[in-house]
Image 1 (tube, rainbow, N blue to C red):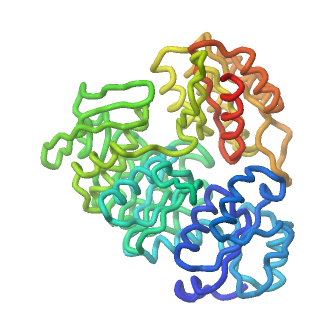
Image 2 (image 1 turned 90 degrees about the horizontal axis):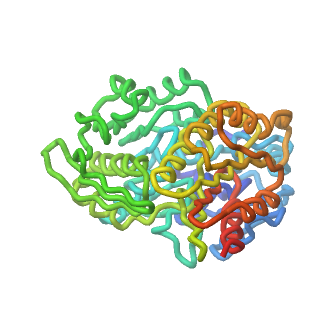
Image 3 (image 1 turned 180 degrees about the vertical axis):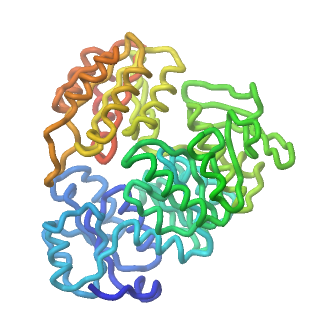
Length: 475
């Protein structure tokens, strides 16, 4: 393996992305291309014909795409960017080893871009990272700060015919806003000027390990922005240097909400934001429902304040924030008044937030959940079952299909049937239907006027097509 070059040497070399269409890979490829780097890639989904519109868009943007057979790796000068989870049996990895190419994980590359910018603004936490990164990036952009934004989700404000998958914005090099991930421990690579911490709850690892990772993250941040409503996040405050707190419930939070000012609708909401530094109040309107999204907005406002944006300006900018793809993304409401929603909910906290938002308004909820892998289902299956049983009411129902599986050596002995059993044991109504096609047929048959159908899951872009097809059938 070659020695690590300096950042200048690194970005002068050609890059090859293995899995270029992935939600964490695509934005990095776009940022590098925007900085005049040579970027090529391959993707198993492209070879299998999944989401062809995404790969057609990438080719239009000038990315050279290769089959995932190793043929794109032709020189030891190339830098292979591959997820830490990619098996050594993948042809690109084997070929890169033969040619002694430098290999970087997604997180290693992102941390180099982040740490070599003028100021890195990081958004961390178990849930809400992509939404807050999108909100914070939009505030900075709307206020003329020209940030570079690295997000794991498509930001609707930045979508154009040329860039339908706008999960990155290539701005200047003075501000770099990015979500940072704790699930693989790579959060330890980042040195933030501003470190936002949204929440700390069970997802990919145990709580003790999460507390250590997030505590260290705050201690490395010049300014920490902490959710005062989340007891686990607030408990880490002593490890931070300079702090701005935000919260809806905590009356001592520096960026908060005037009690009694929240007005919620099924698709939008409003509230009076209070800046307790000076007592000023600012009328916020959000095109997104749900108490969790109001909390996300406060996080973005506080993060922007840490970067020198006045609260009034941040609140004003958020009125124009259009949201993210697959984050409570309303596909449409049919003539028979059935609404279809596409949502990224895949861990207990995200699923609970989405279900609570739906339950706050009238109508039956039909939730379809596709687990994002056998491993995660084993790790958090009990908590997921509890969430569906507790958050849904008598007339509601949840359907699970088999977990996402794109190949590999993962243990597939325990799947969705176990979760359905647990939901029913806890008093909920659940069905196991192995294939997605059969799930679609079932939903079309049982849906009735006034229902809200929510399609939930991660790691599979075809869920959005499934949601759109389902809406077309219901229409």
